[in-house]
Image (cartoon, rainbow, N blue to C red; front, side, top):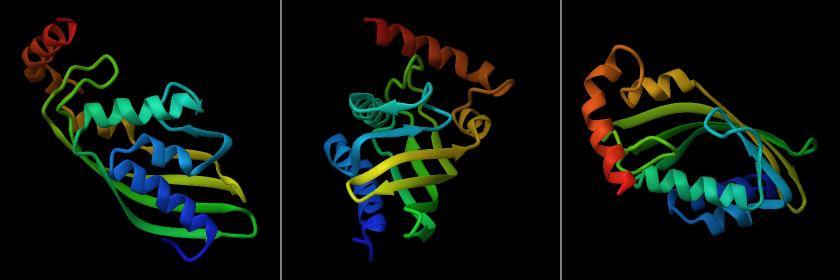
Length: 157
């Protein structure tokens, strides 16, 4: 764990992600804590966070996060983290059937805390890069269409 409560809460959050354990992720949050990033449809809280973790780990069964650098302002209750996400899109992710493509995506989280845990995480990453690594940008998506069609049929069955 980290050296201060801010680090401890965030370490628990990352541990939950890397162990694909939505309950551990949830334990890092204070009541009413929220998450938003380019892959969420707005701001998530409560069970929506748990469902988001479940959906993401289903879509990327080997997903893991590495913390590259962090800086905290304990007085202000903030932590700034640069991270890299690794994973292979081998399961359904929202409306997307699996592409089988791997991602290595960098991003930044701005995390606010109270003494009870994480109150908000605002994540930032390049969604266009994420889609490109999955082969979902033009013209790369043209070669992916047959795989997506087969995956969509399997998902519907």
